[in-house]
Image (tube, rainbow over the protein chains, first blue to last red):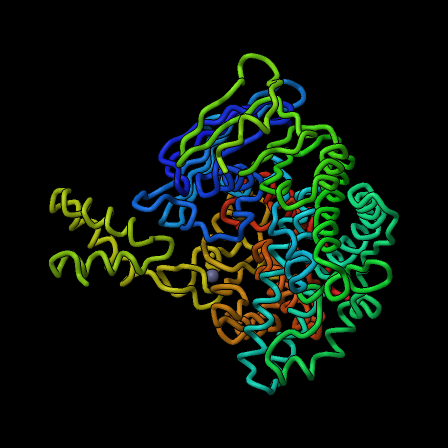
Length: 379
Length: 201
Ligand SMILES: [Zn+2]
């Protein structure tokens, strides 16, 4: 699947703009603050219905406008073309059209446009708290199979309901509420065990791929491990919830379960969060993304569009070159404010200035020129 | 800050309190009503007050009724030993359209949802238990919605019904997950009723 064209209306700093993308590598260049990341974010939005920067939907709509529109033309491997239009409205009533037909629910768009995003914020995967890593795992599961999206939403809902029930209990449960909590626990256990199993299988499969990606990027053999060993999984969630009930009731919140899971990242036998250098952490974050992208590509049989948002400038030349050499085949969009490394050989260059785009060299075959030179002067 | 003269604002506020109607829709409906002939508005107002005055809940199953009993409970030919439990009266309409079910109903008037402050006490649960013996009920089919709250409500009822020694079944999947019964098409719903699974231990 590739995206051949993106149009933005009232999205962030764009009034209207259109971008033509090549099936190979499209470089999006321009000074900082001109809208490169906004463009990457819009493309990512079609994939997850979410901003990869974690921005709320209102923030995606241009100041003064009521709604933002993202349009895309998508071409599938079998040659089938789809036109997609997502409208984000300030009233919160978003709608999505595929080939001009309105989808019953906006979430039905998931799986139509598949995108992997690498961004400098990925460092948070290594440095920040467990929720970043849970989101990474779960996003990867959803990219592998859509059923995990429904499962994840339902798990969130059950935990919210259970926490509300615990809060309402205010420290003590009467017999009737005890039975009510039993049923919510049974529901949570049923879903949680399945989701925990899915996370465990994913981690087991992902580990060696991330290890390999790390070695490719760092150029040295380094033992890297992903550990997912929540205590509740040794008991099963039903038993773990029963054991934690007294505590949960007293504290008025669910203290045990997949909603609190973490994945421990280990380099050279030590926790990467506390013991790795900034360079190692950055390489590990990138390895996680690259590993997941590669796994999703192999597992689903087709590569998601890969967006490298300002990632190359964060890496030294050696690692940037290694990353470019180890990208799996597929469509790539890379944004950059500075000169691209020589290993980046874009097939087309789109220059962005203050929320407007201009193509350079596209339409006349693969763009062959020295990209570094073209971009120099933008600072 | 009231943007419109008082009667208009009151109308918008009242419409906005209806389920599924946001501020923008409320405004649109209000201005539509102001444009249409007075007769049309009078007819709507009359329909609202008439419905509220004449329609009540069935004394047995909590379906909508215009008498002591709803038409289904009043129908002698319906099988009294099988009861289908639904969340809302509108779900009965969906199930009746399938023509697959000849028993009676019980409407819970909602589903368990702590977030909305709804537990078993807020639902017509005790009223269901009170029907089992007097009506000679032998099978309870749990037809709550196939979403989180509907599933949990069905699990709760299955547990609480255990001591009554009745057969407890849950409509089989085949219904869209996360969906409402109201929107399930007749064929799927008919098949779901046929293939219900046993929950009695
Ligand atoms: Zn009735």
